Length: 94
Image (cartoon, rainbow, N blue to C red; front, side, top):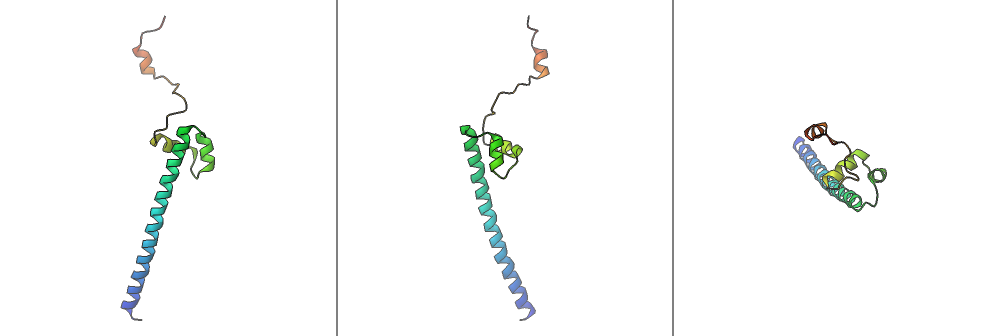
């Protein structure tokens, strides 16, 4: 084999490996999207809570929360913290 043949063989091998990598990456992206959609579906239906979902899927609890928020899942409860600025704008209650 000549140097040119070696180079061509190396290029061919790298092209094949690159194509396999790209195909695997595409499958991973599709699987990740399907999993994220499933997480949103389960949380929307209130079948399981975020902590239970995090025990099952390969994500931490905080990431499950980010997926839920991005998917439009409403919070389990309303916020309980009231802004101090809002309290200043309202007259005192008697």
